Length: 144
Image 1: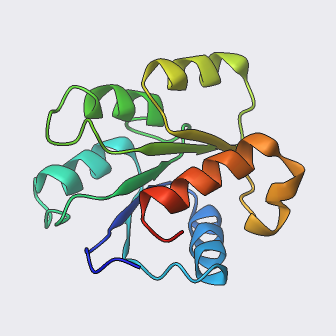
Image 2: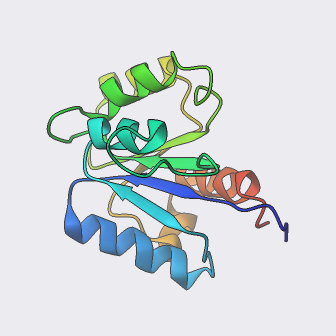
């Protein structure tokens, strides 16, 4: 375990999905601060400190829904990748969409992993790609 402060940014508009992610992370003893933004625009404001307190240090990882109002996940990711301060942050897409076009768009924007919701770490053995993404997620926040 590291002494480095680790922040997680969850960009998700569905309250039940937010609760599910928080519950699943607690089940595997991830207790790092989770900052929640309800859409891509709000997430960018939190990263930049525009009108809200800036997340400091910057998140070590971002968990991102695709389908959200105001600014969807792919729009957020495209903007994030243009900013040198944030372009390096690993992003894991979490979505109900299993559409190949969404996967390809996310891959073009350098996502670290793609997890189809509902998210449950108990069932990762049923999906190789989800297991690989989750293992990478743990490595990135230095918990493994």
